[in-house]
Amino acid sequence: MTVRRTDAADLCWRPATELAGLIRRRTVSPVEVVDAVLRRIDKVNPTLNAYVTLTAEAARREAKAAERAVMRRSARLGPLHGVPFSVKDLVVTRGVRTTFGTPLYRDHVPAEDAPIVERLRAAGAIMVGKTNTPAFGWIGATHNLLFGPTRNPWSLDRTPGGSSGGASAAAAAGLGPLHVGTDGGGSIRIPASCAGIYGFKPSYGRIPAHPPSGAWSLSHVGPLTRTVADAALVLSACAGPDERDPHSLPAERVDWTKAAGGSLAGLRVAWAEDLGFADCVDPEVVAVCRRAARAFRELGCRLDEIEPRWPSPRETWGEIFCGGLAARLAPFLDRTDALDPGLLDLARLALRKPPTAYVQAWLDRLAWWQHPRALFERYDLLLTPTIACPPFAVGLDNPTHIAGRPVGAYAWIPFTYPFNLTGQPAASVPAGFTADGLPVGLQIVGRRFADATVLRASAAFERARPWSQHRPPLD
Image (cartoon, rainbow, N blue to C red; front, top):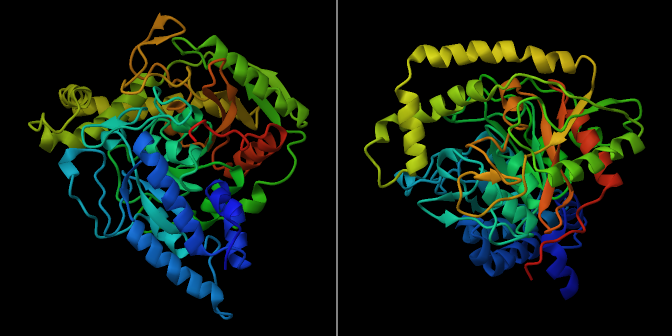
């Protein structure tokens, strides 16, 4: 099983859907695919710092076993047989170091796989390593005291977003086709926007999460990929209940890969450049996203520009997100050497509040739901910018200014965290670039449990405004 040298070099950029087919037809070997990805990681990762733990030896061993299985006539191959994937370092992996991005867990080796990892392995995929994340996923950028910063492949002085920034940088740079991320306030969609790739946050519980994170009621598990079809393939392999996660959703009789196809004709779509509470949105980001939104009219949708004027849920989300982090960090508050100063301040502030503040945030969360609920009675989809600014300087926890105006922490993600409160499916698709060549993402939000509609809308947009031909200038 061999491929021409030129094709071998291109294997790193092939989507998982293609790789799985090539392997199944014996056109390429799982060994060749895994070796190609590992060689590219060796070449590019020292610059990006996307991977923090490599499992090269195990991956090559599994690839050889996968090759032997392909050669057996009677072998039953999984849908991702021989396809490489990475796992965010917040997601546990059996026998492989999982640090949660902090020196506190520098040598932590879990005894079990998270459900998404377990299911990707069962589908035949091969893990090649763990990707960088800020400590406990606390910010929308990617740097930590243990491994340092991850850099954006499109501009090395910018962040790839976070907290799944190692995954987004790896996907954008051709360091494997499939990447596991988590999203408690935008941590799949933010880095997808910053790195010019596709990020899909399924409905809360669609892919089970275990063990629970500090942001357990907000955190979704999902894929970061270069194509919509690859994300749908991950969902097909990983969706469904798991008894370890009592909030996981029942299985649906849906082929998610087929669900991503089809027309959007007749869908009612709303475009909003501000949900009513953004401190500031960069005008260039708005312009790129507005142009991208027009594609939905070309695709047969009824597109309306709206001004929701919703009240801000930032305090509500912050109480739940930061309260969960603080509860997890409470035993470690004396470890000032091992905790980012900003994270330590956040935890101490949250722990000074009465428990009723957390309970009140839950009640406020239920009340705030009535605003998007009413909108989605009229519309099938909501389009917004994914984030309020282009990727900012590497090493910063948050941007200090947007379009010249000073902004506070989390002010640049007004479009993402609301839909962690509601649990709705949402995706970020590459919408275009700024004049400086920085990626901009368009967010697509669907009704509760309407994952298929978000995938279908994403795939239709991808066909109308293809993006996979764009590659960062790394080589």
